[in-house]
Image (cartoon, rainbow, N blue to C red):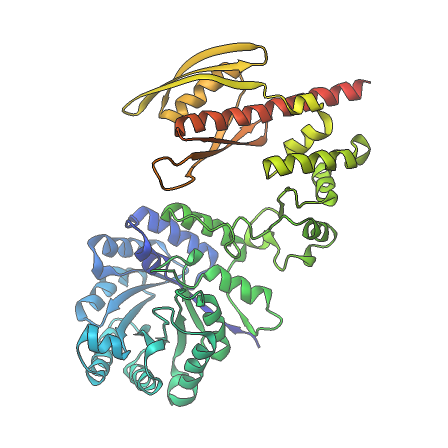
Length: 514
């Protein structure tokens, strides 16, 4: 019979500790609701004693969250425990999470006390917390650097005092998986009352071992995993819960465990946390990174087309992501090009795949990533059209006064030159409005990213934009030491892609008529 792995999410507590700002109540509620919808068992809402906002937010969440159990963190101090109770008592179903360091380095240098006094304090404070709730978790801070006999003594005392969950955190991300397995196994074998509690683990990623350590701990007997969405947290971060969830789901035939998570909500929750916390998700991040379901190699793309399982062990739709993506680059093969042309509705007898592939390789070597509209242009436009920059920047000037900006731009449009000005809320908005006046294209700017190519005063700015036009997404890029000029160039680059796409439609109409 499969055993449940309980998931405690600490995004709102340990995750927030890594931010350069505090989440406000509204933001915490939004994340907590997403976690609840995702099916997280326990949400650690914060550290109520740490600030009035943390206390008030915890109190608000206790009125709103109904399905996930709420948990508050407390030091081994009465006032901390009291504050957790006061903030969460409305929910009627809450956990008090107490922690105290148990390793020699923490006891001697930080607490300036002895192990015996630490144990005495742990016992007293757990009993104190039990006045408020039967659900008390105790964390042996820095347990992975605590001598195993000392750790067994602490754990046994904590269980006798009334702790129902014992957390064995790898606080500084020091431990290797086999070492962690041995720690949990020793506790299971040496602590005579261990069956009266749930063993939990809270792993950090300082050596990149957080998820590996958590999976190893499960195999050794842990039944609760603590982590965060996207793995955010102190220093190098925490165990990424989405990775644990999908590891257990994907390897369910070989692992006798399950979670209560609605996996279809993973991607949405990940993107929400990234947006609210202002922490971008690494492109190669497991499960939720933009490259997690992207393929560039022609061999891989051909395999995926024939059978998804050749190069994908997860179905992106399981986590709420629309589809697999093929990055069209010079490494792509004919199969990927034909696949994209099929998706766009072009039958193979309407274009020459060999000629298209030859032109594709030339453009990919020059440009890098190729998009669908590039393929259309290569397949149906003349060589002259494809090499034409219909829109060319001749002059620009932008003046700003507080939030209001005025852009004046002169573009060469084919054989004509046009000059226009427009006012906008900010520089980019003013540029965007001016270009619309010049071209009469009904475009919508949906993404704008500015990147410095180096950290020096002479660094070149790179601007990437995405523009929506007639239900299609077009990409543009601009480089310049002047970031305003880079912004103008990126949008013009997009406009030329749109112009070529329009030429494609004209040429297809001509072909159909003839």
